[in-house]
Length: 105
Image (tube, rainbow, N blue to C red; front, side):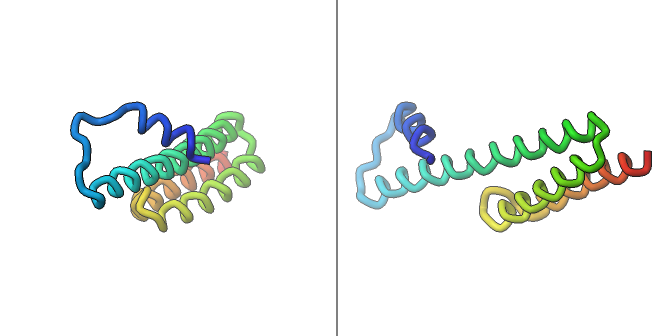
């Protein structure tokens, strides 16, 4: 699942090569964490784009379902170190305001 992202990290290389065993392990762990974080952020961007597309199309039912799945995804990601919980809460609040305005219009 994350193999293409890990290959990209390995191709970039670094000017300093880790010498100790623990430093080599840190490099591997950082590459894996970067790949997972990138994957999670891509999912968030895709979900928020689909919600915003529903808002611009003025489709209330589609926007509600997209908002529900967006909130679920944000709650899952905010439990990890990828995103802070206040950032997730702020984005959910902004999107809920947009959904409320669409319903009132």
